[in-house]
Image 1 (cartoon, rainbow, N blue to C red):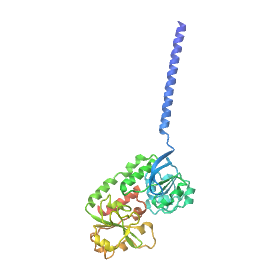
Image 2: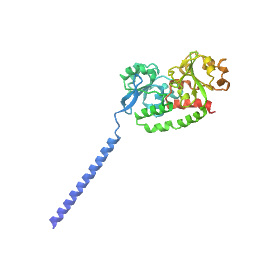
Image 3: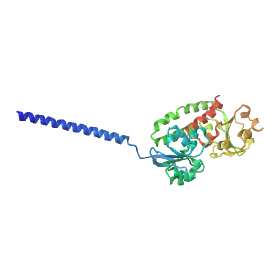
Image 4: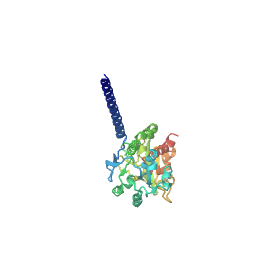
Length: 331
């Protein structure tokens, strides 16, 4: 009987130990699974443009710790996502809301948005590089240093959707996708309000540069006004390419078209050209003063030309651009 009792106790202990072993194995398995699920990838693949401005797949480091930024729209988005501490170098800019990156001695000056200082970029040792269209010609050389993310706006989908798309792309590189919706909140409603105002109204949209006036279409700079905001852009034919600096026209042309509104972006002010003639001095001549737009107070000088010309595509830039229009159209 004593032997039988001893055997039963031994058997019970063995079963208990086995059960504990299985429980520990289960816990260990769950911990391993959890670690695997939270492990960050080393790289991610995004959609970016190549040297020929063609969309392609690009493998970039995930959660890059050091970034070189030579595009103000990309810097704007990175800043808005709270990733400014990753910026190790950037191009010079006059934009007030990005001055912290220019004045910070720990951030390298990498040249301009048109001409990169290649030695400075190499010395920066970035994990990834951001550029815009002005540096497309340096894409291959920069790619020898680090992966190059080249993003742009697309007039076919509109500026707001372009900003959202590019912000989502950049956010996906850092696991910040959940922040994009908050950044974009309210833009569509603001556009809709202005679109209701502009319905049935005509406009000429242009840029003052080197003493002349160039009209812009719906395929590039300031396209927001004629696409999403909804003015009928009568300055150019739909099939004419004006995506860079527009097409120069005479003031007689503007008088002949006689639009309801004239929107003017001062390129020389945007780039800080010394001694340049002000847009007001160019536009407010006797011919323009004879247009309905001028007579009705609808000659509009875009208040933040540097934003429109050098930073279109950023989150803060989009806000300021809409403010420029709202302050005139909805006052």
